[in-house]
Image (cartoon, rainbow, N blue to C red):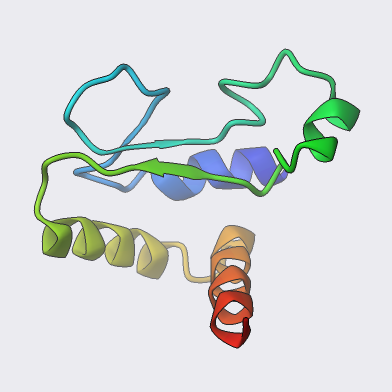
Length: 97
């Protein structure tokens, strides 16, 4: 369920593409648990902190302001999506550290 929510959350992005890193210059987002590390057993992924809620963002050559705006509109579009709560929770926990 969380994996579906993550993929759904990233659909409205315009500048950032949901894809595995191809070594290019464009910004990408990846969900390792269902993409790059999908063949690794769940228990092994958990031991190395590749959780179902982990996302990886590759920053390309686009303007930082444009990337922020793209992420902000995706978050706003999915305001009631569980992944939004996850992102907010992660942000708050990092601020408290």
